Length: 384
Image (cartoon, rainbow, N blue to C red; front, side, top):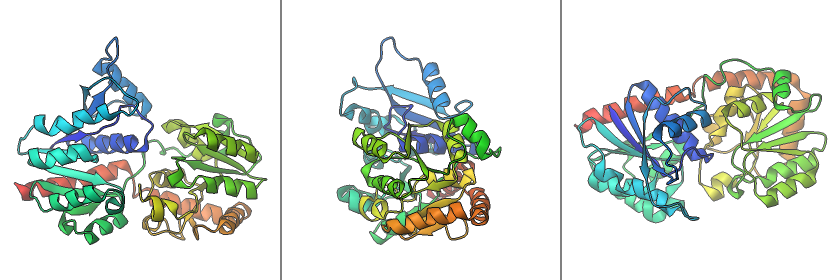
């Protein structure tokens, strides 16, 4: 199978969706697909060669090399709004091969809009409650799902699949393929002492770690509220923070902000932690609805450390009472009690960590690529 994946991000980028795109494209290529990744290219002087861009992307995302073809498409000069990065994707369906074994794949709306009209085989991926966040686009998706050229709508969670089907998207077109983690990155166990030596984090103090987006839709203020209630613990937060959040974090006195971390540094920080935390808030699911079942969850599992997370439907697709400590969302006191319980109970922590590692084996990028390719090949055969 030939697969043309169209993205609208300048690469490399620390946006989480760019990480998910790169790892999915890599996994599909390793599974046997011939993959081309179309991305917008920033106009620079002197021009950035494709070979240099490939090296930058490989280094940034922790790849030995790129097992797929990178097709950077020059666009208009970069603007503050970055609308110009949408142009290559908008016109890509017009120039993509229409061979019978070629599939057009994207998780971005503009390429999807045009692909439905101009390409004979299309796959769209979404991780959001589209009906709530993008009602007009949802109507388009519902219409497109009745067309023969839309082979599949791929989601990252059964919850998203259910929402799409309930909203009228053709049920047989929608399929869940969960995300994963980089199995090779976590192949060698790393003990806490060595991880703290590598990261410079202090020994002799309990460490709670959060790594991911720090936007308002992720309820990061809950992290700081927990830190204020647990002054004896050190909270380490990785991700790009706003000035206001940095100021609030510094005022806590027991919060360390690392900024964005690359793959190996993130792995080391995860291994250094005593507890890995997803803010126990319902806002990401019930209000924001932007990325259900967050990517960080799979990295947490692979790190083999006890996890505290909110007891919510999307989280429960992967986490349960055996591989994580789930707490009622929006109840700060329950979050505090969960942290105290884990740090005071090494047997419980060890049990949860062991179960997390077992669960992680089912969710790797390699597994996702193999399953996704098998689904697409079956749909392609049926469509042809």
